[in-house]
Length: 296
Image (cartoon, rainbow, N blue to C red; front, side):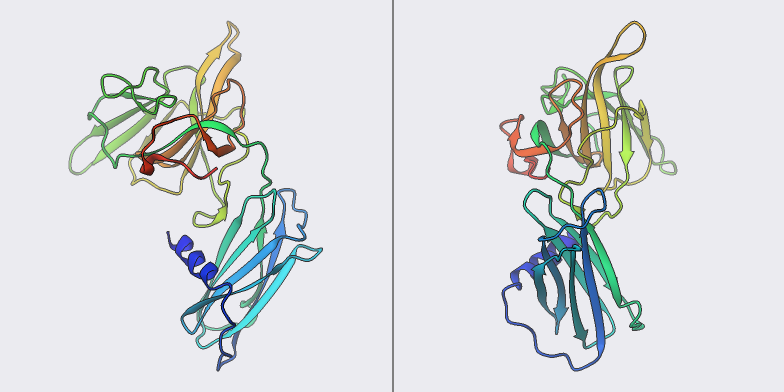
């Protein structure tokens, strides 16, 4: 991913000697403002502002002050720049951001503040988690097929799954209409909801909320567009209700990415809406390297 490559270059250059003085006055000045989820400043956070000088990556490193601020500036040989930001502190997830500065050069626009929100590490838990990459095709077209999150496979006869947590149907139409992809659920109360990220390329190491919401789940979703790898879904499955229609038990989870190239996480404890995954405690064993999950 572009952002990952950019920050990899910056971090490699973090200990290098400072670059030669630029020959022009295309100067930018960036102030990183680091806050918590309540908007309070975080002091003592590790701050990195990365950029390129003479096509070489370099960076300014420091610690945020009592107001959660850290500032860096630089002059460039041309009126355009890509500036990257990273902040971290023990007890919080690392957050990154990126800013593009384009021509024409405008000193007012090139002096700016970039706010980074650090999510606190809460209570990471063991979960069923797996990367599933299958392109756009299901085991069989025009047929509803179940997937078992606790087994990590299609339900028999297409796999080793036992209980359908979610149904997928791929309907091929004609050359003009293309196809439709339907996501549905087996039980009343089960469902899916899309979670919108403020930035699809950067952001917190914990992309999702700490907890899944108690309601707002839709029992069906239909797609005709190409998959979006930056999409996030929150879901509820294995729902059981009493005679009055109240939910007495359910399992909650999340999905990073789109169907059928996605990473799913399922909380094993009924009625626990915590979806903060501990990558060291994956309840699915025997995963191949490309199926393993290392993100919370």
